[in-house]
Amino acid sequence: MKKFLLSILITGFALNTWAQMGLGVKYSYVQSTIQLDNNYGIENAYGLANYGLVLRHTKQPFKTDNFLFGTQIEFNHAQKGWRKKFPNYESLERVYNTLEIPVTTQFMFKRGVFGLSFNVGAHFGYFLSGREETEIAGESTYEDITFYFNTDNRFEMGADGGASLYLDFNFGTFELEGRYAYGLSNVFNRDIEGATNQSSLNVMSVSLNYIHKLNFGKKSKTEILKIHDKK
Image 1 (cartoon, rainbow, N blue to C red):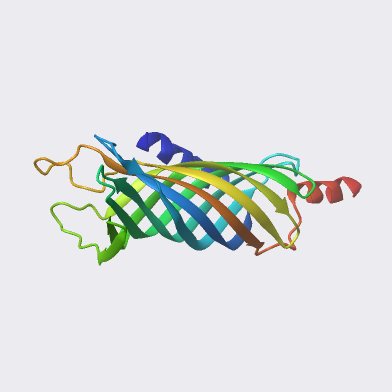
Image 2 (image 1 turned 45 degrees about the vertical axis):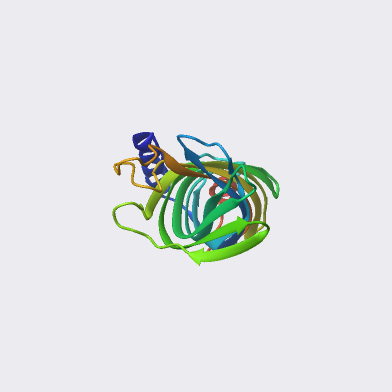
């Protein structure tokens, strides 16, 4: 899986020699959960938020404006975690604040200003901090998470895939995106005696993005060819 993702990303960078550059922002509504050996009582953590910067590099590989190929890098502050309910109505929720860098390859189809995009890639993250909420008898207590070197893994990575609808104008692109991120690393060190073998985080998000075109005055490959044919 990791070699497959790496090959996709390398291909994306290699093909993007002629580019339309864009810089933008994004905001995401997130629900997240954890995959354990025993998932009894595990639920999604809802109402989390991600926000960050987006750098997009797109290419027009054919003599048409209807298909674009691109690479996108994001720098996000991401919240992710999970919730666990116990039989006695007690519950525990853990939420991590993460510095996250997703890198995806974009396949964009458009007609006029309307477009459909698919993306696949990977994300790499580092847990900056965390919060743990314990609810007992209807009362909640909050505590900051302490990371221990032997038991906690603060580095995270995973595979990403999603799709979006977008409106593309000369100055920039407005985008509504859905994405699923499947964790490939463990939150807890599985080499510790008695630890779970699997503790990966899985995240679903819906995002609103705006990408501003840095060189929006530049003519597309199709426009350049039309001008050349007239001559």
